[in-house]
Image 1 (cartoon, rainbow over the protein chains, first blue to last red):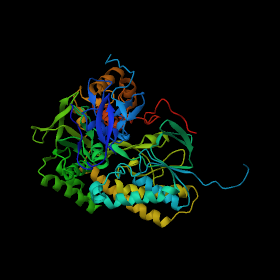
Image 2 (image 1 turned 180 degrees about the vertical axis):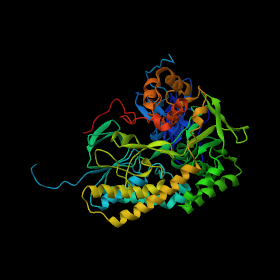
Image 3 (image 1 turned 30 degrees about the vertical axis):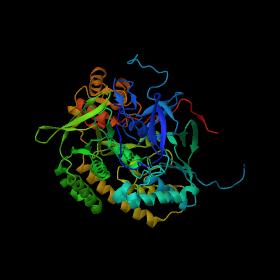
Image 4 (image 1 turned 90 degrees about the vertical axis):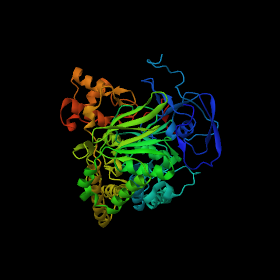
Length: 103
Length: 463
Protein backbone atom coordinates (compact mmCIF):
# COMPACT_ATOMS: atom_id res chain seq x y z
CA UNK A 1 0.00 0.00 0.00
CA UNK A 2 1.57 3.24 -1.04
CA UNK A 3 -1.04 5.60 0.35
CA UNK A 4 -1.46 6.20 4.06
CA UNK A 5 -3.44 4.02 6.44
CA UNK A 6 -4.21 6.72 9.01
CA UNK A 7 -6.33 9.73 8.02
CA UNK A 8 -5.66 13.17 9.46
CA UNK A 9 -8.87 14.70 10.79
CA UNK A 10 -7.63 17.90 12.47
CA UNK A 11 -4.44 19.74 13.51
CA UNK A 12 -3.38 19.84 9.86
CA UNK A 13 -1.64 23.22 9.94
CA UNK A 14 1.42 22.15 11.93
CA UNK A 15 4.93 22.73 10.52
CA UNK A 16 6.23 19.96 8.27
CA UNK A 17 9.12 17.71 9.23
CA UNK A 18 10.95 15.17 7.07
CA UNK A 19 11.89 11.66 8.07
CA UNK A 20 13.39 8.74 6.19
CA UNK A 21 11.75 5.30 6.17
CA UNK A 22 13.81 2.48 4.67
CA UNK A 23 15.84 5.08 2.81
CA UNK A 24 12.82 6.87 1.37
CA UNK A 25 12.02 10.47 2.32
CA UNK A 26 8.61 11.09 3.84
CA UNK A 27 6.86 14.27 4.93
CA UNK A 28 5.25 14.35 8.39
CA UNK A 29 4.22 16.99 10.91
CA UNK A 30 5.73 18.37 14.11
CA UNK A 31 4.03 16.55 17.01
CA UNK A 32 3.40 13.33 15.09
CA UNK A 33 4.38 10.11 16.77
CA UNK A 34 6.68 7.99 14.64
CA UNK A 35 3.72 5.65 14.13
CA UNK A 36 1.48 8.40 12.79
CA UNK A 37 4.28 9.78 10.62
CA UNK A 38 4.83 6.32 9.13
CA UNK A 39 1.17 5.31 8.77
CA UNK A 40 0.00 8.56 7.19
CA UNK A 41 2.68 7.89 4.55
CA UNK A 42 2.26 4.12 4.20
CA UNK A 43 0.19 1.12 5.14
CA UNK A 44 2.35 -0.91 7.50
CA UNK A 45 5.18 -0.63 10.03
CA UNK A 46 7.02 -3.93 9.90
CA UNK A 47 6.87 -7.58 8.98
CA UNK A 48 5.86 -10.19 11.56
CA UNK A 49 8.72 -12.50 12.57
CA UNK A 50 6.28 -15.38 12.84
CA UNK A 51 4.26 -15.13 9.62
CA UNK A 52 4.36 -13.64 6.15
CA UNK A 53 2.08 -10.85 7.29
CA UNK A 54 2.82 -7.21 7.85
CA UNK A 55 1.91 -5.33 11.01
CA UNK A 56 0.72 -1.79 11.61
CA UNK A 57 0.59 -1.64 15.41
CA UNK A 58 -2.36 -2.51 17.61
CA UNK A 59 -2.73 -0.81 21.01
CA UNK A 60 -1.12 2.64 20.53
CA UNK A 61 -0.41 2.80 24.27
CA UNK A 62 2.86 0.97 24.66
CA UNK A 63 1.35 -2.32 25.83
CA UNK A 64 1.44 -4.65 22.80
CA UNK A 65 4.90 -3.91 21.34
CA UNK A 66 3.54 -4.54 17.83
CA UNK A 67 4.97 -1.28 16.46
CA UNK A 68 8.71 -1.80 16.86
CA UNK A 69 10.88 -0.18 14.23
CA UNK A 70 14.63 0.42 14.24
CA UNK A 71 17.05 3.27 13.82
CA UNK A 72 19.76 2.75 11.24
CA UNK A 73 22.17 1.88 14.03
CA UNK A 74 19.89 -0.91 15.26
CA UNK A 75 18.33 0.87 18.24
CA UNK A 76 14.76 -0.33 18.78
CA UNK A 77 11.94 2.22 18.92
CA UNK A 78 8.32 1.77 19.91
CA UNK A 79 6.72 3.82 17.13
CA UNK A 80 3.51 4.61 19.05
CA UNK A 81 5.31 6.28 21.95
CA UNK A 82 8.22 7.89 20.11
CA UNK A 83 7.85 11.40 18.74
CA UNK A 84 8.95 11.80 15.13
CA UNK A 85 11.75 14.31 14.79
CA UNK A 86 12.94 16.14 11.73
CA UNK A 87 15.77 14.20 10.09
CA UNK A 88 14.97 10.91 11.82
CA UNK A 89 15.79 7.78 9.83
CA UNK A 90 14.20 4.41 10.58
CA UNK A 91 14.03 0.93 9.10
CA UNK A 92 11.06 -1.43 9.20
CA UNK A 93 13.20 -4.53 9.61
CA UNK A 94 15.74 -5.16 12.34
CA UNK A 95 19.22 -4.42 10.96
CA UNK A 96 21.28 -7.59 10.74
CA UNK A 97 18.48 -9.91 11.86
CA UNK A 98 17.16 -12.87 9.95
CA UNK A 99 14.38 -15.12 11.07
CA UNK A 100 14.01 -18.82 10.54
CA UNK A 101 10.87 -18.48 8.47
CA UNK A 102 12.22 -15.66 6.33
CA UNK A 103 15.72 -17.00 5.57
CA UNK B 1 25.16 8.83 60.20
CA UNK B 2 24.13 8.09 63.74
CA UNK B 3 21.97 11.21 63.80
CA UNK B 4 18.38 10.73 64.97
CA UNK B 5 16.97 12.88 62.15
CA UNK B 6 13.57 11.55 61.09
CA UNK B 7 13.59 10.52 57.46
CA UNK B 8 10.17 11.07 55.92
CA UNK B 9 8.63 7.91 54.52
CA UNK B 10 9.05 7.41 50.79
CA UNK B 11 5.82 6.89 48.89
CA UNK B 12 6.16 5.72 45.31
CA UNK B 13 3.20 6.08 42.95
CA UNK B 14 3.21 4.18 39.66
CA UNK B 15 1.05 5.82 37.00
CA UNK B 16 -0.10 9.39 36.38
CA UNK B 17 -3.66 8.94 35.19
CA UNK B 18 -6.62 10.11 37.28
CA UNK B 19 -5.81 7.68 40.12
CA UNK B 20 -2.09 8.45 40.24
CA UNK B 21 -2.57 12.22 40.09
CA UNK B 22 -5.13 12.25 42.90
CA UNK B 23 -2.99 9.89 44.99
CA UNK B 24 -0.01 12.20 44.51
CA UNK B 25 -2.09 15.23 45.51
CA UNK B 26 -3.15 13.47 48.70
CA UNK B 27 0.42 12.53 49.61
CA UNK B 28 1.65 16.08 48.94
CA UNK B 29 -1.18 17.50 51.07
CA UNK B 30 0.20 15.41 53.95
CA UNK B 31 3.54 17.17 53.58
CA UNK B 32 5.43 14.34 51.88
CA UNK B 33 7.16 14.29 48.50
CA UNK B 34 6.06 11.25 46.52
CA UNK B 35 7.93 9.76 43.57
CA UNK B 36 5.51 9.59 40.62
CA UNK B 37 6.59 7.25 37.86
CA UNK B 38 4.85 7.70 34.52
CA UNK B 39 5.43 5.67 31.39
CA UNK B 40 3.87 8.50 29.40
CA UNK B 41 5.55 11.69 28.25
CA UNK B 42 2.95 13.83 30.01
CA UNK B 43 0.63 13.08 32.91
CA UNK B 44 -3.01 12.21 32.25
CA UNK B 45 -2.88 8.49 31.67
CA UNK B 46 -4.73 6.98 28.72
CA UNK B 47 -8.25 8.22 29.44
CA UNK B 48 -7.12 11.81 29.92
CA UNK B 49 -4.17 11.50 27.61
CA UNK B 50 -2.90 14.88 26.52
CA UNK B 51 -2.24 15.89 22.96
CA UNK B 52 1.22 17.20 22.04
CA UNK B 53 2.04 20.77 23.09
CA UNK B 54 1.61 22.20 19.60
CA UNK B 55 -1.93 20.80 19.08
CA UNK B 56 -4.79 23.28 19.44
CA UNK B 57 -8.05 21.34 19.89
CA UNK B 58 -10.03 22.44 22.98
CA UNK B 59 -10.79 20.11 25.91
CA UNK B 60 -14.41 19.65 24.81
CA UNK B 61 -13.25 18.24 21.45
CA UNK B 62 -10.92 15.79 23.15
CA UNK B 63 -12.84 14.63 26.20
CA UNK B 64 -16.51 15.49 25.47
CA UNK B 65 -18.69 15.27 28.59
CA UNK B 66 -15.57 14.59 30.69
CA UNK B 67 -13.74 17.75 29.58
CA UNK B 68 -13.95 19.46 32.96
CA UNK B 69 -12.73 16.36 34.78
CA UNK B 70 -9.84 15.93 32.37
CA UNK B 71 -8.83 19.58 32.80
CA UNK B 72 -9.11 19.27 36.57
CA UNK B 73 -6.79 16.23 36.61
CA UNK B 74 -4.28 17.97 34.31
CA UNK B 75 -4.38 21.21 36.29
CA UNK B 76 -4.14 19.24 39.53
CA UNK B 77 -1.00 17.56 38.26
CA UNK B 78 0.54 20.79 36.93
CA UNK B 79 0.07 22.38 40.36
CA UNK B 80 1.97 19.46 41.92
CA UNK B 81 4.79 19.43 39.43
CA UNK B 82 7.36 21.18 41.66
CA UNK B 83 6.37 19.30 44.80
CA UNK B 84 6.77 15.76 43.57
CA UNK B 85 9.65 13.72 42.19
CA UNK B 86 8.14 13.17 38.71
CA UNK B 87 9.72 10.59 36.41
CA UNK B 88 8.08 10.73 32.95
CA UNK B 89 8.88 8.21 30.19
CA UNK B 90 9.93 5.75 32.86
CA UNK B 91 8.89 2.10 32.97
CA UNK B 92 8.54 0.13 36.19
CA UNK B 93 9.59 -3.32 35.08
CA UNK B 94 9.84 -5.18 38.38
CA UNK B 95 8.94 -5.02 42.06
CA UNK B 96 11.14 -7.03 44.40
CA UNK B 97 12.45 -6.81 47.96
CA UNK B 98 10.78 -3.49 48.72
CA UNK B 99 12.14 -1.82 45.59
CA UNK B 100 10.61 -0.77 42.31
CA UNK B 101 12.92 -1.30 39.37
CA UNK B 102 12.69 1.42 36.79
CA UNK B 103 14.05 1.90 33.30
CA UNK B 104 14.18 5.18 31.44
CA UNK B 105 15.91 5.03 28.10
CA UNK B 106 18.93 2.86 28.86
CA UNK B 107 19.24 3.93 32.53
CA UNK B 108 17.86 1.72 35.25
CA UNK B 109 17.39 2.25 38.95
CA UNK B 110 16.06 0.38 42.00
CA UNK B 111 14.00 2.70 44.19
CA UNK B 112 13.20 1.63 47.75
CA UNK B 113 9.70 2.40 49.00
CA UNK B 114 7.93 2.50 52.33
CA UNK B 115 4.53 2.50 50.60
CA UNK B 116 3.78 1.75 46.97
CA UNK B 117 0.58 2.91 45.26
CA UNK B 118 -0.04 1.13 41.96
CA UNK B 119 -2.22 3.10 39.53
CA UNK B 120 -1.36 1.06 36.47
CA UNK B 121 -4.60 1.50 34.51
CA UNK B 122 -6.23 -0.85 32.07
CA UNK B 123 -5.86 -2.14 28.54
CA UNK B 124 -8.44 -3.54 26.15
CA UNK B 125 -9.81 -7.01 26.78
CA UNK B 126 -9.64 -8.98 23.56
CA UNK B 127 -11.23 -12.09 22.15
CA UNK B 128 -9.46 -13.34 19.02
CA UNK B 129 -11.22 -13.72 15.69
CA UNK B 130 -10.13 -14.76 12.23
CA UNK B 131 -8.07 -11.96 10.72
CA UNK B 132 -7.42 -9.92 13.86
CA UNK B 133 -3.70 -10.09 13.09
CA UNK B 134 -4.17 -8.16 9.81
CA UNK B 135 -2.68 -4.68 9.55
CA UNK B 136 -5.48 -2.21 10.14
CA UNK B 137 -6.91 -4.01 13.18
CA UNK B 138 -6.51 -1.96 16.35
CA UNK B 139 -7.63 -2.22 19.94
CA UNK B 140 -10.64 -0.05 20.82
CA UNK B 141 -8.56 2.02 23.22
CA UNK B 142 -5.85 2.34 20.58
CA UNK B 143 -8.32 3.73 18.08
CA UNK B 144 -9.32 6.33 20.65
CA UNK B 145 -5.70 7.26 21.37
CA UNK B 146 -5.18 7.83 17.62
CA UNK B 147 -7.93 10.42 17.59
CA UNK B 148 -7.39 11.94 21.02
CA UNK B 149 -3.61 12.21 21.05
CA UNK B 150 -2.84 12.55 17.35
CA UNK B 151 -6.02 13.78 15.60
CA UNK B 152 -6.03 10.86 13.16
CA UNK B 153 -8.50 8.11 12.30
CA UNK B 154 -7.13 4.55 12.12
CA UNK B 155 -8.54 4.27 8.58
CA UNK B 156 -10.73 5.84 5.93
CA UNK B 157 -13.62 3.45 6.64
CA UNK B 158 -13.70 2.07 10.18
CA UNK B 159 -15.74 -0.77 11.72
CA UNK B 160 -16.12 -0.70 15.51
CA UNK B 161 -16.60 -4.24 16.82
CA UNK B 162 -16.83 -5.60 20.34
CA UNK B 163 -18.72 -4.47 23.39
CA UNK B 164 -18.52 -2.08 26.30
CA UNK B 165 -18.94 1.64 26.85
CA UNK B 166 -15.83 2.45 24.79
CA UNK B 167 -17.44 0.89 21.69
CA UNK B 168 -20.10 3.58 21.63
CA UNK B 169 -17.93 6.39 22.96
CA UNK B 170 -15.12 5.99 20.44
CA UNK B 171 -17.47 5.40 17.49
CA UNK B 172 -19.38 8.58 18.38
CA UNK B 173 -16.11 10.51 18.80
CA UNK B 174 -14.95 9.34 15.35
CA UNK B 175 -18.24 10.41 13.77
CA UNK B 176 -18.06 13.80 15.46
CA UNK B 177 -14.47 14.29 14.31
CA UNK B 178 -15.50 13.65 10.71
CA UNK B 179 -14.20 10.09 10.27
CA UNK B 180 -16.15 7.63 8.12
CA UNK B 181 -17.59 4.91 10.35
CA UNK B 182 -18.80 1.85 8.41
CA UNK B 183 -20.63 0.15 11.29
CA UNK B 184 -20.85 -0.26 15.05
CA UNK B 185 -21.22 -3.94 15.92
CA UNK B 186 -21.96 -4.98 19.50
CA UNK B 187 -21.76 -8.61 20.64
CA UNK B 188 -23.98 -7.82 23.63
CA UNK B 189 -27.73 -8.07 23.34
CA UNK B 190 -30.10 -5.22 24.03
CA UNK B 191 -31.87 -7.35 26.67
CA UNK B 192 -28.63 -7.55 28.69
CA UNK B 193 -28.83 -3.79 29.05
CA UNK B 194 -32.35 -4.00 30.46
CA UNK B 195 -31.18 -6.58 33.02
CA UNK B 196 -28.32 -4.27 34.00
CA UNK B 197 -30.52 -1.20 34.36
CA UNK B 198 -30.96 -1.26 38.17
CA UNK B 199 -27.16 -1.20 38.66
CA UNK B 200 -26.63 1.36 35.88
CA UNK B 201 -29.02 3.72 37.63
CA UNK B 202 -26.34 4.16 40.30
CA UNK B 203 -25.01 6.91 38.00
CA UNK B 204 -27.99 8.25 36.04
CA UNK B 205 -26.04 11.03 34.31
CA UNK B 206 -23.42 8.61 33.01
CA UNK B 207 -26.17 6.26 31.83
CA UNK B 208 -27.78 9.19 30.05
CA UNK B 209 -24.47 10.10 28.37
CA UNK B 210 -24.28 6.53 27.09
CA UNK B 211 -27.77 6.63 25.64
CA UNK B 212 -26.94 9.94 23.96
CA UNK B 213 -23.93 8.31 22.26
CA UNK B 214 -26.13 5.56 20.83
CA UNK B 215 -28.50 8.19 19.45
CA UNK B 216 -25.64 10.18 17.92
CA UNK B 217 -24.43 7.06 16.09
CA UNK B 218 -27.91 6.30 14.79
CA UNK B 219 -28.55 9.93 13.86
CA UNK B 220 -25.43 9.84 11.68
CA UNK B 221 -26.97 6.96 9.71
CA UNK B 222 -24.27 4.51 10.81
CA UNK B 223 -25.49 0.88 11.05
CA UNK B 224 -25.59 -0.14 14.72
CA UNK B 225 -26.22 -3.83 15.39
CA UNK B 226 -26.43 -5.59 18.75
CA UNK B 227 -26.21 -9.28 19.58
CA UNK B 228 -23.79 -10.01 16.72
CA UNK B 229 -21.23 -12.83 16.60
CA UNK B 230 -17.90 -11.99 14.93
CA UNK B 231 -17.13 -14.23 11.94
CA UNK B 232 -13.98 -12.81 10.33
CA UNK B 233 -11.93 -9.78 9.44
CA UNK B 234 -11.10 -10.11 5.73
CA UNK B 235 -8.00 -8.77 4.08
CA UNK B 236 -4.53 -9.35 2.75
CA UNK B 237 -1.64 -10.27 5.07
CA UNK B 238 0.59 -7.64 3.48
CA UNK B 239 -1.78 -4.76 2.71
CA UNK B 240 -4.34 -5.23 5.45
CA UNK B 241 -8.03 -5.16 6.26
CA UNK B 242 -10.68 -5.03 3.51
CA UNK B 243 -13.83 -5.89 5.44
CA UNK B 244 -15.59 -7.44 8.42
CA UNK B 245 -18.26 -10.15 8.58
CA UNK B 246 -20.54 -10.84 11.53
CA UNK B 247 -23.43 -13.22 12.13
CA UNK B 248 -26.70 -11.61 13.13
CA UNK B 249 -29.14 -12.91 15.72
CA UNK B 250 -31.30 -14.46 12.99
CA UNK B 251 -28.34 -16.53 11.82
CA UNK B 252 -27.68 -14.63 8.62
CA UNK B 253 -24.31 -13.05 7.91
CA UNK B 254 -23.59 -9.45 7.08
CA UNK B 255 -20.40 -7.94 5.75
CA UNK B 256 -19.10 -4.40 5.82
CA UNK B 257 -16.33 -3.00 3.64
CA UNK B 258 -13.63 -1.40 5.80
CA UNK B 259 -9.90 -0.71 5.81
CA UNK B 260 -9.70 -0.57 9.61
CA UNK B 261 -11.27 -2.34 12.58
CA UNK B 262 -11.33 -1.14 16.17
CA UNK B 263 -12.06 -4.08 18.47
CA UNK B 264 -12.33 -4.68 22.18
CA UNK B 265 -14.58 -6.17 24.83
CA UNK B 266 -14.41 -3.62 27.61
CA UNK B 267 -11.17 -3.39 29.60
CA UNK B 268 -8.92 -5.46 31.85
CA UNK B 269 -6.70 -4.16 34.66
CA UNK B 270 -2.94 -4.12 34.16
CA UNK B 271 -2.04 -6.32 37.13
CA UNK B 272 1.49 -7.54 36.29
CA UNK B 273 3.13 -5.23 38.85
CA UNK B 274 0.63 -6.20 41.56
CA UNK B 275 1.55 -9.79 40.77
CA UNK B 276 5.30 -9.11 41.03
CA UNK B 277 4.59 -7.29 44.31
CA UNK B 278 3.19 -10.66 45.43
CA UNK B 279 -0.40 -9.51 45.88
CA UNK B 280 -3.01 -12.19 46.48
CA UNK B 281 -5.40 -12.67 43.55
CA UNK B 282 -8.96 -14.03 43.57
CA UNK B 283 -11.32 -15.04 40.77
CA UNK B 284 -14.15 -12.63 39.97
CA UNK B 285 -17.19 -14.57 38.76
CA UNK B 286 -18.99 -11.65 37.13
CA UNK B 287 -16.13 -10.61 34.84
CA UNK B 288 -14.48 -14.06 34.64
CA UNK B 289 -10.95 -12.99 35.55
CA UNK B 290 -8.47 -13.07 38.43
CA UNK B 291 -8.11 -9.72 40.18
CA UNK B 292 -5.83 -8.59 42.99
CA UNK B 293 -7.49 -8.73 46.40
CA UNK B 294 -7.74 -5.39 48.16
CA UNK B 295 -9.79 -3.92 50.98
CA UNK B 296 -12.32 -1.09 50.33
CA UNK B 297 -9.51 1.48 50.71
CA UNK B 298 -7.21 -0.23 48.21
CA UNK B 299 -4.89 -2.07 50.60
CA UNK B 300 -3.53 -5.16 48.87
CA UNK B 301 -2.79 -8.47 50.54
CA UNK B 302 0.97 -8.31 50.04
CA UNK B 303 4.24 -8.65 52.01
CA UNK B 304 4.98 -4.89 51.73
CA UNK B 305 2.79 -1.79 52.07
CA UNK B 306 1.15 -1.96 48.68
CA UNK B 307 -2.02 -0.14 47.54
CA UNK B 308 -4.10 -0.49 44.40
CA UNK B 309 -6.19 2.27 42.83
CA UNK B 310 -8.01 3.07 39.61
CA UNK B 311 -8.70 0.75 36.71
CA UNK B 312 -5.48 -1.15 37.46
CA UNK B 313 -7.28 -2.69 40.45
CA UNK B 314 -10.84 -2.93 39.07
CA UNK B 315 -12.26 -1.41 35.91
CA UNK B 316 -14.56 1.14 37.55
CA UNK B 317 -13.85 4.07 35.24
CA UNK B 318 -12.03 7.38 35.41
CA UNK B 319 -14.33 9.06 37.92
CA UNK B 320 -13.87 6.20 40.36
CA UNK B 321 -10.13 6.24 39.70
CA UNK B 322 -9.88 9.76 41.12
CA UNK B 323 -11.70 8.74 44.30
CA UNK B 324 -9.84 5.44 44.72
CA UNK B 325 -6.50 7.20 44.15
CA UNK B 326 -7.24 9.54 47.06
CA UNK B 327 -8.48 6.65 49.17
CA UNK B 328 -5.42 4.46 48.53
CA UNK B 329 -3.12 7.37 49.37
CA UNK B 330 -5.01 8.00 52.62
CA UNK B 331 -4.72 4.30 53.48
CA UNK B 332 -0.98 4.46 52.85
CA UNK B 333 -0.60 7.60 54.96
CA UNK B 334 -2.58 6.05 57.77
CA UNK B 335 -0.45 2.88 57.69
CA UNK B 336 2.69 5.03 57.75
CA UNK B 337 1.48 6.65 60.96
CA UNK B 338 0.56 9.96 59.33
CA UNK B 339 -2.59 11.77 60.48
CA UNK B 340 -5.54 11.36 58.08
CA UNK B 341 -9.06 12.73 57.84
CA UNK B 342 -11.36 9.84 58.80
CA UNK B 343 -14.42 11.72 57.55
CA UNK B 344 -12.92 12.04 54.08
CA UNK B 345 -12.22 8.31 54.01
CA UNK B 346 -15.85 7.48 54.79
CA UNK B 347 -17.14 9.78 52.02
CA UNK B 348 -14.65 8.39 49.49
CA UNK B 349 -15.61 4.81 50.36
CA UNK B 350 -19.25 5.65 49.72
CA UNK B 351 -18.35 7.23 46.37
CA UNK B 352 -16.27 4.25 45.26
CA UNK B 353 -19.08 1.85 46.26
CA UNK B 354 -21.48 3.71 43.98
CA UNK B 355 -19.02 3.50 41.07
CA UNK B 356 -18.64 -0.18 41.87
CA UNK B 357 -22.36 -0.74 41.49
CA UNK B 358 -22.36 1.09 38.15
CA UNK B 359 -19.38 -0.97 36.97
CA UNK B 360 -21.24 -4.18 37.83
CA UNK B 361 -24.05 -2.85 35.66
CA UNK B 362 -21.63 -2.28 32.79
CA UNK B 363 -20.23 -5.81 33.18
CA UNK B 364 -23.76 -7.21 32.93
CA UNK B 365 -24.80 -4.93 30.06
CA UNK B 366 -21.64 -5.61 28.05
CA UNK B 367 -20.51 -9.12 29.04
CA UNK B 368 -17.17 -10.62 28.05
CA UNK B 369 -18.20 -12.98 25.19
CA UNK B 370 -16.43 -16.01 26.64
CA UNK B 371 -18.68 -18.40 24.72
CA UNK B 372 -16.84 -17.48 21.51
CA UNK B 373 -13.71 -19.33 22.69
CA UNK B 374 -15.31 -22.75 22.22
CA UNK B 375 -16.31 -22.07 18.62
CA UNK B 376 -13.09 -20.43 17.35
CA UNK B 377 -11.64 -22.44 14.46
CA UNK B 378 -8.29 -24.16 15.03
CA UNK B 379 -6.53 -21.90 12.55
CA UNK B 380 -7.56 -18.68 14.33
CA UNK B 381 -4.52 -16.85 15.66
CA UNK B 382 -4.79 -16.66 19.44
CA UNK B 383 -1.47 -14.95 20.20
CA UNK B 384 -0.89 -12.08 17.76
CA UNK B 385 2.73 -11.67 18.86
CA UNK B 386 3.93 -15.12 17.81
CA UNK B 387 1.00 -16.35 15.70
CA UNK B 388 0.17 -19.22 18.09
CA UNK B 389 -3.20 -20.57 16.94
CA UNK B 390 -6.20 -21.77 18.91
CA UNK B 391 -5.47 -25.23 17.44
CA UNK B 392 -1.87 -25.09 18.74
CA UNK B 393 -3.20 -24.65 22.28
CA UNK B 394 -5.86 -27.36 21.90
CA UNK B 395 -3.27 -29.81 20.52
CA UNK B 396 -0.85 -28.88 23.31
CA UNK B 397 -3.53 -29.83 25.82
CA UNK B 398 -4.18 -33.12 24.05
CA UNK B 399 -0.50 -34.07 23.79
CA UNK B 400 0.88 -32.78 27.10
CA UNK B 401 -2.20 -32.75 29.30
CA UNK B 402 -1.48 -29.08 30.11
CA UNK B 403 -4.81 -27.87 31.47
CA UNK B 404 -3.66 -24.58 32.97
CA UNK B 405 -2.53 -21.37 31.24
CA UNK B 406 1.06 -21.25 32.52
CA UNK B 407 1.60 -24.90 31.54
CA UNK B 408 0.02 -24.27 28.14
CA UNK B 409 2.29 -21.23 27.77
CA UNK B 410 5.38 -23.29 28.53
CA UNK B 411 4.49 -25.86 25.88
CA UNK B 412 2.85 -23.74 23.16
CA UNK B 413 4.35 -20.26 23.79
CA UNK B 414 0.87 -18.72 24.03
CA UNK B 415 1.27 -15.56 26.13
CA UNK B 416 5.07 -15.63 25.87
CA UNK B 417 5.44 -13.01 23.15
CA UNK B 418 6.14 -9.31 23.14
CA UNK B 419 2.90 -8.29 24.85
CA UNK B 420 3.40 -10.87 27.64
CA UNK B 421 -0.13 -12.22 27.30
CA UNK B 422 -1.88 -8.88 27.77
CA UNK B 423 -4.01 -9.41 24.67
CA UNK B 424 -4.34 -13.21 24.55
CA UNK B 425 -4.18 -14.31 28.20
CA UNK B 426 -7.88 -14.12 29.02
CA UNK B 427 -8.89 -15.72 25.73
CA UNK B 428 -6.29 -18.47 26.18
CA UNK B 429 -7.79 -19.32 29.57
CA UNK B 430 -11.27 -19.51 27.98
CA UNK B 431 -10.00 -21.71 25.12
CA UNK B 432 -8.35 -24.05 27.63
CA UNK B 433 -11.43 -24.18 29.87
CA UNK B 434 -13.78 -24.78 26.93
CA UNK B 435 -11.56 -27.52 25.52
CA UNK B 436 -11.11 -29.19 28.89
CA UNK B 437 -14.76 -28.61 29.80
CA UNK B 438 -13.97 -27.14 33.22
CA UNK B 439 -14.61 -23.73 34.82
CA UNK B 440 -12.33 -20.96 33.54
CA UNK B 441 -11.21 -20.25 37.11
CA UNK B 442 -9.49 -23.66 37.00
CA UNK B 443 -7.49 -22.59 33.92
CA UNK B 444 -5.65 -20.17 36.21
CA UNK B 445 -4.05 -16.92 35.14
CA UNK B 446 -0.81 -16.04 33.39
CA UNK B 447 1.73 -15.12 36.07
CA UNK B 448 3.37 -11.71 35.72
CA UNK B 449 7.01 -11.93 34.70
CA UNK B 450 9.80 -9.38 35.03
CA UNK B 451 10.48 -7.42 32.94
CA UNK B 452 6.80 -6.64 32.45
CA UNK B 453 7.75 -5.00 29.16
CA UNK B 454 10.81 -5.58 26.97
CA UNK B 455 13.96 -3.68 27.98
CA UNK B 456 16.78 -2.58 25.69
CA UNK B 457 19.80 -4.87 25.91
CA UNK B 458 22.03 -1.82 26.47
CA UNK B 459 20.40 -1.03 29.82
CA UNK B 460 22.71 -0.09 32.71
CA UNK B 461 22.82 1.52 36.14
CA UNK B 462 21.76 5.15 36.35
CA UNK B 463 24.32 7.65 37.60
